[in-house]
Image 1: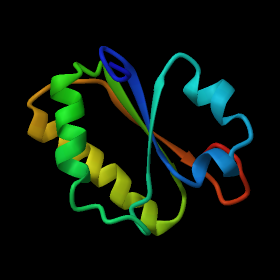
Image 2: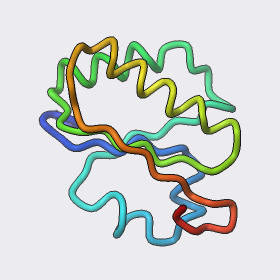
Image 3: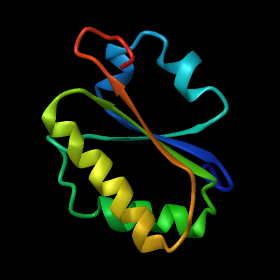
Image 4: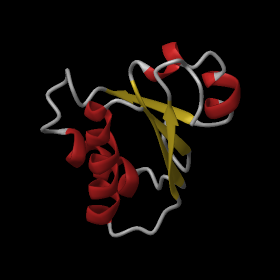
Amino acid sequence: PFFQNADVVLAADCAPFAYADFQEDLLKGKALAIACPKLDDTTPYIDKLTAMITQSNIQSLTVVHMEVPCCNGLIMMAKQAIAQSGKDIPFETVCIGIRGDKK
């Protein structure tokens, strides 16, 4: 029920700590999912995200990632999950700089 008909933010687990206004600017009114493409076993992520999109009727997906190379995997996983879901939902990315600024 948490993701049902929600706008979802999929954030790299370090992004909220790096960007002080994360909650106010990016999360307000949205549901949050957290992942780390560098440290987590990402094998089940695409299937889980695809299921979230299809079964919970997610309205939009925003990926919040850091400007480091390992975070690109989070964007690719989200794009692949949207493609596998067969749904055309709004998708955007927000990049957080290593100094905590929004790019």
